[in-house]
Length: 161
Image 1: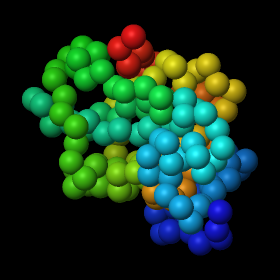
Image 2 (image 1 turned 45 degrees about the vertical axis):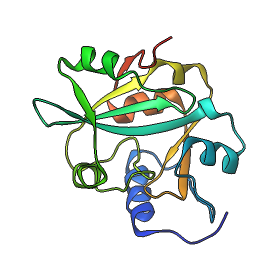
Image 3 (image 1 turned 90 degrees about the vertical axis):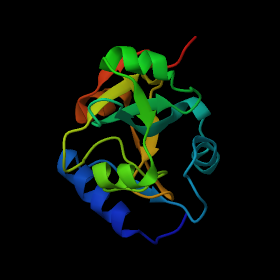
């Protein structure tokens, strides 16, 4: 871990401070961009990592955020069924435009615009979970209930079993 904070991590830390004062952003010198990297840096299970994945509705072109367990792969057909239209994975430019953050650092909430959000029901089994905090080197810990409350997400099964 290091003491350096990126501009986007600082911006998200301000969002967290507005939500509740008890969150602490951890910044690592090594990458936490992928679920595996984050779990290794934190020392938690892969399932406790919250992947913030942006999709785009094929017809509406609207962004959709999926907060998935790090151990799950999003089933795009399930997601399309919930959304009512087919989806595409968003490219890096669309992700940054819609969220203000780069892929690998997209936090689970705190965007300047509303993004419809789905929360992977598998995350509810953990006492604590870890999510990106604005950069590919920063994370923060929260509970599944806090994630649901702050993200205004709909809880769904998002991985095919």
